[in-house]
Image (cartoon, rainbow, N blue to C red; front, side):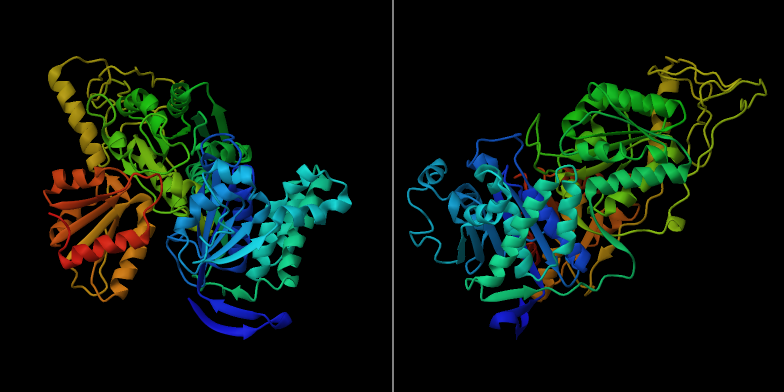
Length: 628
């Protein structure tokens, strides 16, 4: 997508381009995530819009040089607003044969391939099934190939340090970063400062990495292999102060902000689980904001402690992924019965069971909706992007505190680990989440008793009484309570009434109407999604409209309760397409609730949708070519 060219230093062509997708790929010990993250930070500081897709193995250390051990980091940056990390890379950096074999099919013909030739030994080629060296057998002819002996050049640059060859080679990822930074006219000062800070306790290691980084930059500057460099101008983003943020970091910041806006101490009771663990790691840094983090011995203890904190008057939070939700289900049901606020952060991953710990999926929707015994309804909110996790957390806490209920936030691996620019909000604009506690008897019969289930007529929420408040002693536990009085009750009519009241409380939570983006106003096909599918769906709609076809897009943030106008919206289109990274869970809910013939398009590959594939599906839908 080049728009202009000029002649730069040394007579090289400098090509202006609107967008670039770069993928760094190598062994899981090659530092590809650090390399990609540093390049991302530079793009963010420069002012580009961006989106990233880290992709790494679940094994702590898969056998070196094998396909299961390949780790990659994809970055899409542009001078305009973008929605996805990109379908295919324009540039692939392959650090070894395994990285090449695992990723080469994604590189379009004509794409740039930068290869670390030092790793293309007979042994490493044999590990991944190459019968001949692809750098020598013309199999890479469709691509623009740049062979670079990165390990050799890195060792040479670090030779004056006296570092061993093995230790020196570990810095080859910084060589790659330096080369790509030169190629795209990125600065060097910030990365060098970062390395000095990261390795502050080991200054010799910091300087070694900086030498490798400079060597990569200087190699690009002096070699004749690269005749073209590229520039991507800053994006025209809305006015504000921005920073790069991942979904997990945004969730953590949202929890911190919710604690400040509510005036409540925050207690995170949790157990480490991929890909949610970074929420715990980040919140543990913020004790100064009234955050207490407790790493329990298991998932059940974690949520039990969080619910206990809520009973004690704190904002109870627990974080997990799908397998942990299964273990927490009994306590979530207890929170429903007790009618206490509780924030449940579910960062979804591939399942079932242990499944794909480092891969993404959207398959916990029905578990969040119905995965408890009895009728135990809870609100469900799904952020659509990494930065949206901040607002989703605040929204969920508002519901939890106002309606005295556990609330699910359904993030996923793609959102959690992906990053994008985030406009830092003004604290004055954050919602007021202050809540009140019961302080005196409330029995309507004038008996001077405290009735813990006497409900607010508007919200149907029960009063929240802090233990130890004189005169407000009341019974808790999982047994059914009598309406109003809160004593244990086995009365059939009372149970029926309490079940319906709890359901009515959730159903009555006001949520914004779903908005439809239909630029031409004449679309007959509506595509509707939820969660992280927002970006690929939006990018696909752009492609379909650019081809002269009309398609409408809607996206659900609130999955329970659903927007009041959703039924009317769905019934106003001839065909409804629902892309999901599961086997059709939202589509099933829409069919059952609104009696619409929703067409389900599903994917459970552990990877996000590509805009390219969804554009094909939507084109078929508009033309009437989808199967019935």
